[in-house]
Length: 425
Image (cartoon, rainbow, N blue to C red; front, side):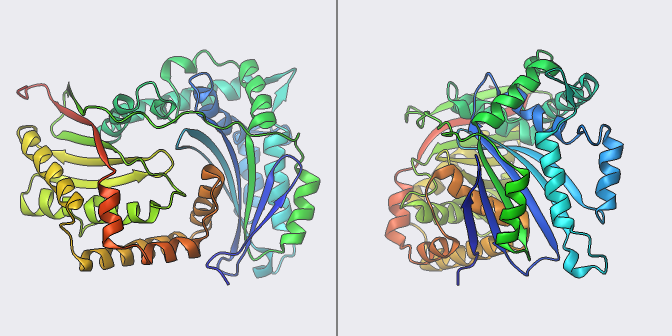
């Protein structure tokens, strides 16, 4: 028996994924839509799920929709837009109590699936256009979401690093779209895009809980039906390795934000991916890592420092907060830790500790239904099937030599520093 037992069924125009588990007292439904990142559509895609969850033909106001969720024993509904590699993913989720644990026998899972169907197949629209008041309201909120990145300097510096590092690649596009494109969207153009997205996107429906896969499939087949399609693939390759570049940007900030981008040349599903995860963990992923111990603890150069992988794009980013005058020394020590990794200057104990932390992290992710969906969805994005059992086994079997080999494939691409107005060049 695997860590997760997933049943996958081809439906009309989408795939149904059911995880039957007694772990939760709720049932979680997640609808995912995947399409290549594109300048032409990124802002519409960021707006669309918020319009869909705001109202429907059957629940023409947000208040009526929320009231109905309360009637379903306080069901929760949320939407999200994310980037995985060169794809933009829309997620619509509903979490509802499992009626098995209630004295009332109302079929809550069926009702929640009906509501999801209502949201995506019967939106509040007329004459080929969404309700204009709803669209205008959600456009204002989208502008605030885009602006919030500029106000949060930690997020802003991460965004700017990607913008500089991946210039000309779809991955450079911001997940919430471009501010200057929001006002160009109308109730009609968004409705046209909605129809196009449901005709062309790769569609996946996940149901997690103590449910019958057969029953879920029967209900889903009566509620969801779409045209067959061949999902569009992103045709972008990783940017070429090139001479490292340094970008310094001055703003009225009190603390410098140093972000460094590397090309790992390894993606999720590649044979070396397990070794890459260990490499990242030892280098900067955790509190026992080289960056944390040497940049922050030993030399007191950073308020925070960590590295993270973008597994579907083949990137690793280092994020840190440093005083303006410590830029050169911080970069020097960060580079030294990378050289230590490339030369194998780390112990078997560090490897074992990192394996244990990653395993715990993975198993913790499974403690939530949405975490489970995110793990399973890697397969959809990568088109490579990696079971959690394979993941854990592959990581446990990874050797020090394999970690060193991975380290030597990693290339520094871009150093980005957000510094103060008064800082010296």
